[in-house]
Image (cartoon, rainbow, N blue to C red; front, top):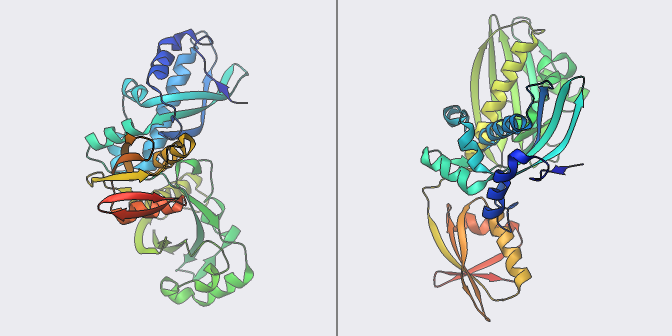
Length: 357
């Protein structure tokens, strides 16, 4: 059961929680980046201090968050920030579970970071952030030893067996591995000599993933592993190659290194699709023909949940109409599509946006 941290339980957090209480809002959840399942362990001895455990959770959660919303080259520039700064980004946190076992402490935490502060921090570093959107993708890994002209699929392929691991929570792409289908094996075997040009349509069509797929082809050529990737997500296609020094297939460390490198590359491609250009400033007025508080709160939750919206406030509130002033980092078309996803229909008249119930 999740345990909410309270000042009376941990005296050293009294001032911290007073700060959170004063500056939090009614929409904390919607205005935050939530990072879950932060696992921390530590030796339980005379030097054990709970605040040090919480600090570790903050630092680990911050790295996971920044990794998920920035491209890898930008992440490397900002991953190591001092704890004092990281704490200014934290809106709230909770202890999901904790236990002491064999002189060791084990805790699982949930951290909520203030979205506005994180985005402002990235903007100060001239870094665009990506929307934190997970995506299910069909993944087909193929291993070919070109020297022996042999094909390894499914459990014979070490990259198939090891692709899913405990670190997958740090990536946005969620991989749906190809089923072990003998017909697929025969089909790929037939195409082995021109595998890079094969479209895999006969295999992809078996999965209901809206043609979202990644084909990973690894060719062992003497002392080099040559990889070729066919990437297609949300109808955006790209092909790219990368080479690695060859290693023995039972070398788990090098296998994991190659897999992690490719996952970083694939996540970067997905983040680029969802990149938010904060230099774009779209100011709009959105009129809502109601004074119903529940309806207004519903719209606020929707606005808080749209990553393309940088800021908003209620500009006018009277008996006939409620007007929101909205600042967005998008084009009008993209923002309207986001509203449509929430079943909100928008019409535009004289540069004023109207919400049609």
